[in-house]
Figure 1 (cartoon, rainbow, N blue to C red):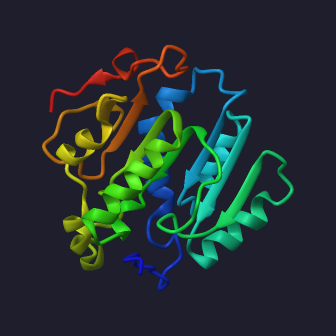
Figure 2 (tube, rainbow, N blue to C red):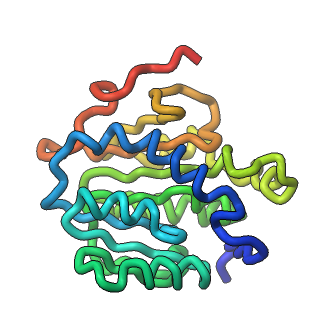
Length: 216
């Protein structure tokens, strides 16, 4: 049985989704905005109501999106039902089989809903296995009303940087981005983690060529 919590008491927007969206794009946007990705595919896992999905669809040839929560899935599906390069599906990533690989995998703000470290590691490895070029992971949502006790409790569910590096192995370069800067932290608390596959034809350059390094 999956250990996924499903908060249904408030909508995604009421729980800070719009602010979170802006913070996420601030972090991963610079890595992608100057690249020609018109021949590449992407998947947005945990797409909520589809704002990041829509942002990606302006840049990628094909974008698949996966959402677990009923209300969010319904809104995303309705929003993109007439868009030929977006496919929205409903499912739980811990049990949903990905039928193909993607050039880029986006797994943003989902892991903290899983209370088991074993499941979090398995899901991360699963996403990496299906990422041909890069996997963008936001380990949790530090700007997501963390003063709310329900979200403070999830601080225990952040994935350690040690775990993130161990999953990368020799296949990926790994970078941590926060507030638009490359950072080095003991814990990836809410930061964006970018796994870049080490391959000669990777369209994504090293992030050290794009981002400045934070002094913090």
